[in-house]
Image 1 (tube, rainbow, N blue to C red):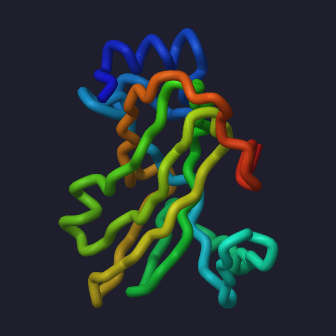
Image 2 (image 1 turned 120 degrees about the vertical axis):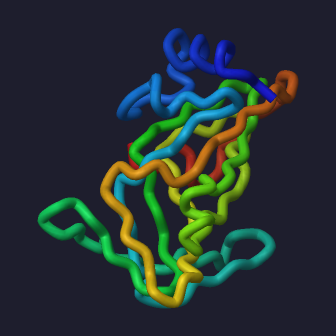
Length: 166
């Protein structure tokens, strides 16, 4: 696992993470906090197959915040989009975990792996379990990326999500 000293250098000298709000606040001893750009509601179903030839990504619509920047969410499943753009070197991978404050409020972020070579502004699944809902403010820190050194890979990520939302 990469620590804050190594991460700060990778962020400031190699653009590991850009478009963040406050490096000193978001950089943690063992990771980096991702902040909320937007929340999207699902409008329909998707489809997943082995080869991705029949893959369908569910349509979504952005939920607009109120005049004070709050997004009011009922119990359910949503897509969250992050402010930050991540540019993974070929020797680093990352996973994200839900920040504890979100968990304590009855919600969690479901994530996949940030592969070596991936570059983009990611999204994840947000599940609000709390029957009373959840209020999220624009730019709230919702997940923490934890980075691991992998050793150089032969070929970096080259899937359909490469350079997403850039």
